[in-house]
Each structure stands twice: as C-alpha cells, then as structure tokens.
Image (cartoon, rainbow, N blue to C red; front, side, top):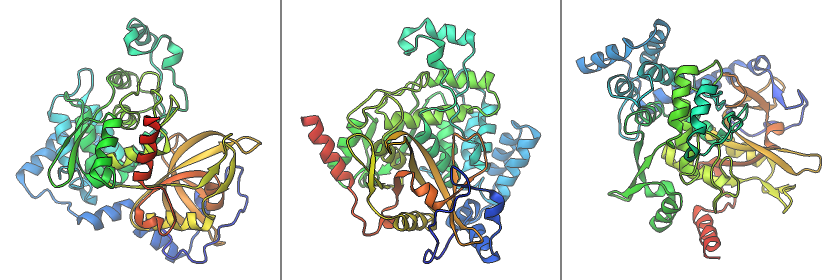
Length: 448
C-alpha cells in the first residue's frame, strides 16, 4: 500500500483498452514498496487489530474444532488449519463477539433450512474467508424440472424460464461487493451471517449504533421505517435490526446445493446477496428474477442506488460511510464534469485504504455522446506503484469470473468512478451532502 501519496503520478499511460495492468508489472516494485504492500495485507490487518490468537486453549474450543473438521473434505481441513494458524479462526470481530469457529460450529451442529446441506455451507464459508475473491455474483441456471414447478406458483413472481435465467451479469453487484468486504475484513461477522441466514430462523440480528444509520435518532428511525427494515430500539442509542433474504432465495439456494456448476454462486452467496439486496431495496427483492420494486430511493427495478448502497453497507458492516459523488450528470445522463480533481479522488481512496478500509466504488460506462449507459460496483483493496511511478489500484470485481485481483491504472479507473463510500475522515474538507440532507430531500419528495 502506498504510504506517501505526495508525488504519485496520476497519468494516462495506455496499457490496454480497459486500463488494466498485468500482475507481473505490478509486482515489479522496489523492495520498500513490496514490504509496504505486504504489511497492509488483510491477514496482517486482522492480526494487528484483534491480536493474534491461534491456539485452541480450551477443551470447548478443541471440541468445536474437531466437530467442524469432521464435516470437511481433506483439502478443506487443510484450509481450516491454515485459518487457525493465521489467527482468523479465533477472530471475534463480529457483532455479538462470537468467533469464526463459534459460527462454523453452529453451521454443522444446528438445523439448517430444509434442503440445504450443512457440510456444503460450512465448506463454502471457509472457502470464502480464506479467499474472498471466490465470492461471485454469477447466478447459475435453474434446471427445467425446477423451473416448471416454479411456474405453477404465480405468487413467486415469475412466468417463464427466461426470467429465471439471469445470465452473466446480475444486478447484485452492490450486495456482492459488500459480501466480499465482510469476508475479507470481518470474517467472524461474515460466518455469523452465513450461519444465521441458512438456519431455520432464516435471519440474523445486528445491534447497531444509531450513528451508523444517521446523524440523529429521528432521521435514523425515519430511514429504518422507509427501508422496511425490522428493528427494535435498544439501550445507549442503539437499534437491533433483523436482516433476512427473501423467501424465494430458498429455491435458489436449494438449486445451488444440488446443481451448482463451477464459477456460479455458492449457497452462502445466494443467501447473503438476497439478504443485502433486501436491506437496500426495502424488502422488495425477488431472488428468482433478480428484480426489485422501484421506490423513492431508486426508480429502477434492478440494482441498488448510491444512497441505498450506502445505507446497506452501514447496516451490514456497522461502519458508517459517507457517500461521495464524483461525476456531475445533466438531465440526459451525460457526464458534464467532476466534483473534484483526480488527485483528490486518489488521495481520499488511499487514505481510506491506509485506515484499513476497502473502498466500494460505482463505475459507469458511457456511449459516444458521454451519456451513462450502465454501472457496476467494484472494490478497491490496495494501492501500488509501477516501476515508472504510476499509481495502480488493486480491485476485486465480483463479475469477472476470477478470484484474483484486477490491477488498473488510477487514471483509467478514476475517470469511470461515479461514487464511492468513504470513512468521514477520508473525505476531508470536501463538501458532500450529509445523510440528513438526503433524508430531508426524500421527506420532501414523499410530501410532494
């Protein structure tokens, strides 16, 4: 990771049509830069933040480890042992203080939703936190015999197999990026959510500070009500929120249990992405056709808007983010300018990375007239420099079919970034709308 942002070259060298840099070129750094990058790897960040704990010190911990291990294939047992040695297995950075091991143990010892396989789910959870790059938004197909059964139930919201075959690109990129971020930065919470969402309760509860939702309690309660997120007020300015997938996600999860092909979503991916899409879409998401109802926050029936994304990320991680919009669009959707220069954008992203925070950004593609025609969320995980001094961002793209990071020249990537979710400290003096401003705008919209 770059530790000194002064003098970094934000240039526009052409390396490919999409601005990608090969991993080999990125790895040709000075020894100092290699050491800096290694010191900021997420495994080391976890150990630094929580204190390395890689010993099963109690009989209870040993019993849990053995019970989890007994449900695994030999290759996954190796990964489980690796997670123990790295300190990840006993990491307790979860909402209720439970460890990764505690929650893996729940998966293998407590009942799962009918039709789901606890051994597969625990293997998928272990795989995801060992290599979050394996998390994908690729839906997978539904077999004809299952599809015909779905058609007979019109209340499920689909009428043909074409509606079920979402294809290569789904609208769950925001949810999948947040899922990736949870697995990489908060492994205990990721597995806790996997355990809860696949359980017979089909849900997980989080206790969050009011400040995670909005600056004031009044605004936070208004947002929770408008997002239809079940909650109960707690003590000390907290709320307990209930997160759950839509019921149709059970069908998708059962299909992936029996018919998952390489490169498709896991059962954990299905449940996690549905749950996060439901948080942002006001509980209107249908996992069968990847659609949601339009709302005051988003006129579209697919994906999540910038504001919905920011709300969902805060609820999922417990870390409030500031939504920063970089591109200025006119009424036709044409990019007419930016709210700051590229160097400021780079500085804000690098500051976030230095704070140990990944940055989920919304990137857009445009037509020949400069009008936005589609968008996609990716996660910036690191900042590096090439031998000639160019700044490069390491990114995770949950739609690219690869579990390896993509390296992009900063200039090429930043030109595409429409918005980002950043810690308030990383935004600095830049003027950005506060959550209260967004709330006031939507209140006026509703009143009108």
